[in-house]
Length: 60
Image (spheres, rainbow, N blue to C red):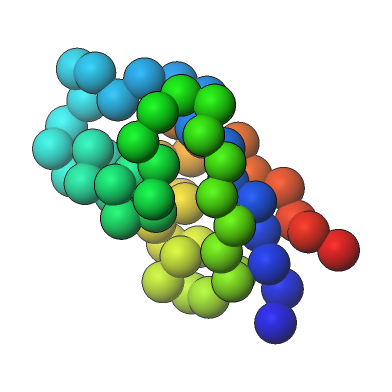
């Protein structure tokens, strides 16, 4: 299974509650924090929800 590296690049301040909760569910709590996840449909949907607050790269 593919893995992705997700990094928070923008603040969650003044964002809707669902976006804040999505960042928390991804494991992101601070700017510049990086986490790795398997590229499952659930995770990719969460990434799509907050794609304007994060950067994503594929791990080879």
